Length: 604
Image (cartoon, rainbow, N blue to C red; front, side, top):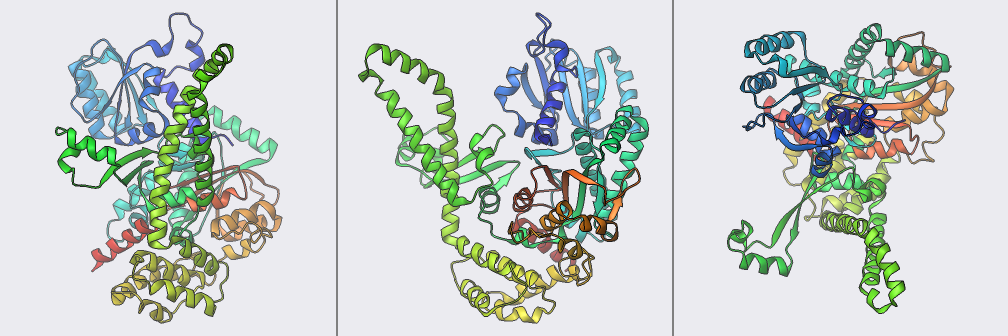
């Protein structure tokens, strides 16, 4: 399967090329498209997409001399064309109409994500007609790009508090409907960009089923209109190879979100604050920094020179080679790799410093090689500094919160449904520690509760007695768990039909699979009997006669409604590399528990 991130980047490059295919202009002399100086105007959502895929240097090389937010005041640049990429909201439409009436730019290339509704289009057309500037407006383009590809095969729809909006919001049905509509727009964008027509499996009687049904209807409607989709359908039927889109509700499995992981990417999200792929670190200042502040009285930092810490901001960008190659490795391996690469860097640096001691001819040759390698050397040094600082911050959290002990104990708990005395003793030992955060203790108790499929909360009282505010915690855990008992397919549902399919897999223990999702996919891939069980366990949506027994799934798209986690993605990768993982938002244990706590407060 193609990298979803690369496909999205390619689509944006076409937009930057004024919506012409790149090969149409590449060979024309004196008409290189990146030599046309352009203005890029975007809204908040588009900025999140762009910031992960491009840096400022990239955009300048593409001929984009200015990048401006649509809702900020902007000066007139009448000789340059403007490329707008934004959602088709009424506010954005009115801003664009005003820009055209003021003649801010030479030409206007309008790109809406994912499309512009008819009602807004009529409103926009009327506004443009009244400006008498319609000749400056190029075509209106619609692009199904309404998702953020945070990694090559991971995307999010950036719907904050999505679990709360979909599953806990009982009073505002309109808000829930808007959230579901936004999810369907995002999933249709992914399917369109991948140029695939998947078989859709959804957990029944849930938000996932509603989304799957409406998404299938959207695909059906577009199949009737598009010749390309019809040809694609014929090709899929001929080769009997399909992609599978599995849409599941978050409550199917909570343990992996609550779990204290040992994988680097999950640790970064769990222990550090990550927003839009940006990590903010507080690190202790070095002596040099303190001296610089004393001499620089005009700096902002000098006003806080008594502070021993400084804030660093790092972006987990697609051009971060170290992150791309190693983010799914266990944390100790990351530390070893940083040490190894740091030593390699020092060796090359020392070699450069000693060039003057070599004879002239050898020095010239070495110098040429070094100059050629210097940009990569500098880039590697920045990456090493970045990840060294990130690892130092993570190590501090591991030591203060005993995360290694939580990881080992939770693995033991999740590996068996039987409760043992050894587990209980280890749990009590961690709960009694005064140094450990309350939220880590709550996570451990909930993991035990779900892994052992307990139904009686009184059994947890013995654990809760070891935590301060035990009555508040018991009330919260009751609120957290009660709703799952009533939900079909939840981890507390005794009649969960997913288990029937999971039992078909022989490689669950071999791959040490913990999540329901990875177990399901493992069974579907390796077991014909599991595929036969699909119509009995899922709502199935498709657009031709469906014979699960004969279907060989070559590509998998997994989408979790209500929030996903990188641990889940890393587990599924053990089974298949032909995977794209998506979710409404990337969840951490803290963000999930906060959503549920906020809804509990509203109810009270």
